[in-house]
Image (cartoon, rainbow, N blue to C red; front, side, top):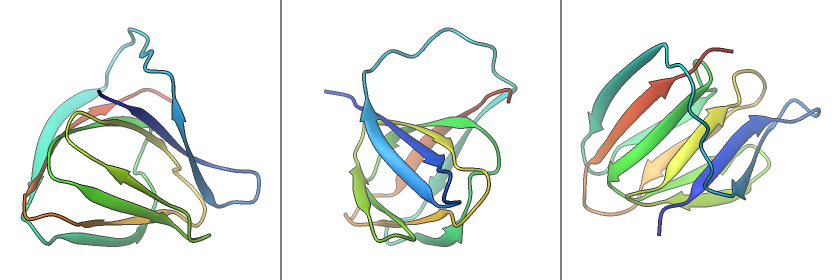
Length: 108
């Protein structure tokens, strides 16, 4: 079963997340593109470059916020990332698969 996980910047300036109902409204996209990160990949502290959906096709990742909260993303999950300012988050691949994903960049 696919999940929708929202990642945003709270009033404290830090990234927070919550699982939401899987109800993605039809909306315009600014750009759609795909990216692959090899197995074992990581990405240290960063914010989302813009508001976007990230659809995971392969790979299992652990995301961590600066507050130490963690969540795992698996194939089929959709991440709505809009923590574009503040402390940000990091991720690491935790299985032996590459992370294949589709980005859908959204208007602000």
